[in-house]
Length: 243
Image 1 (cartoon, rainbow, N blue to C red):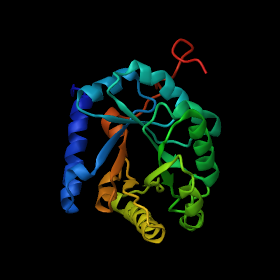
Image 2: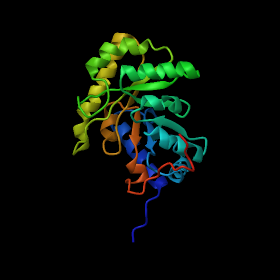
Image 3: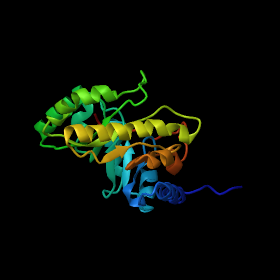
């Protein structure tokens, strides 16, 4: 019987893949930050990854994160990588150091308003729908260009860069045009609006090598670290969550 691969061993393998992809692109490996996507996985799995040297974890449901984060050692850092609902903003701001998926001007305005009420200055990434998929959230590149000035006028928000989730591809290299499109969108916005947008959040377990080749600074990796999700995913209970 083949022994089960530990989370620490998977982390080491992912780090080696990141370093190899960065080297192939002529980039230092430390230009790429790994976000371990812990959504649906139990606090114990997160603690194991933390013990293995992983620092930053990604959650996509505020309710799950509110229940899970207190059960994980406090040195863990948290990014929100999902679609943030308006009624969850107030809960999310104290939990997460970076919001990856700010996908509309309306949402940015809501975050700015709540941040003003709570004294927060959240760091955000603007989600761009690079493939124009009707089922995905996000600004189109043209829409973002037209609304960027309005976003930048929201003085509580720190816009760190852009994020995308391209459509799944049968081969990793086929995702490169989408990652290239996000980088080019970022470069145009920096030039036109005169603001630094250093962060590009793009690439997941199946395609982060291609994303690194195109300039990713944050890669969101879940199954390659924690294993495939099963039907027995961790969920908040009445004992560990009260909305």
